Length: 136
Image (cartoon, rainbow, N blue to C red; front, top):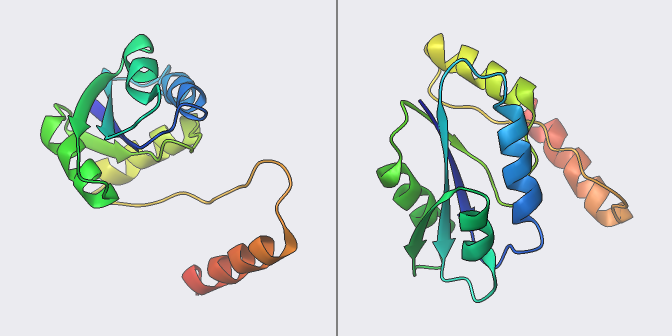
């Protein structure tokens, strides 16, 4: 089983699309999957959106992303854990590539970031510098 763990704090504007992207990305998976949204003390509709989308909701009150990820991992039933930020859209290549890597002995990985829409010059420059740094 694959467990998708989504840490979330006040993500009502992003979460629906993220959960839909996870479902689409997993539609060809050869094994079952679960989606766990770790609600870290949201004051908006985040937990309701997650429940309405069929995700398991794990409530915590830590306001710390590492604690959210750890709580999701503890609640997960899958052999493979995919941590997906609540404002991130994954696709089938992420899932299939991640599974291949894990089955070949890798312990973790990441994905290239592509921004949607307009990105201010300073932010774009920072991202470009970061990409050069991590690929060196």
